[in-house]
Image 1 (cartoon, rainbow, N blue to C red):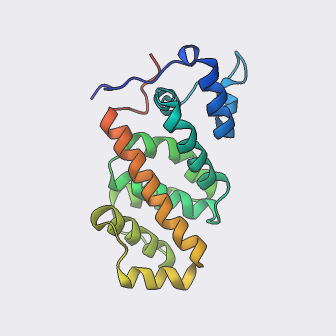
Image 2: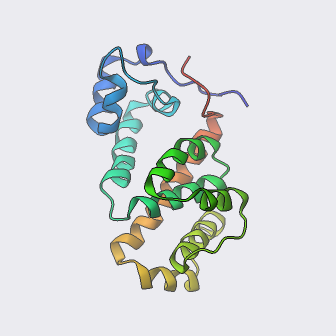
Length: 186
């Protein structure tokens, strides 16, 4: 599917929008730093089309990535599982390198991608079940919750829900607009 709403190219984003994005999401700074900036992720160009939502959204997403209590491996496990469950190819492809850097092993990534068997630790298996239950039924089952509550404190439990919910919402936006990971700004 070609993009229904095309991302803006860096040079098409107004300076005030760039300033809002940079102030809300420090990770975006490198994409607007100078003429030698790395290629801008298409999602940033897409969100720049609605700066009133993009700034707060990116701020919240940045808090999950940089200010959360979950370790990076747990967060990336949740994100990849959510991306797979919601068929969010863009999120999957963008987070593969982050997942590897966070310590997810290639066989774990393959098991998530194929929804296949793997010898998961109990906490990881509960996290994966939580993703399935949240995406499919919008709640975590009691058995899964008990396992998670035995491993995580209340703050981390809430963050598990926020990560899955946030990336499910992002999947809807990206899948709904038809944004593909390889799709560059116009």
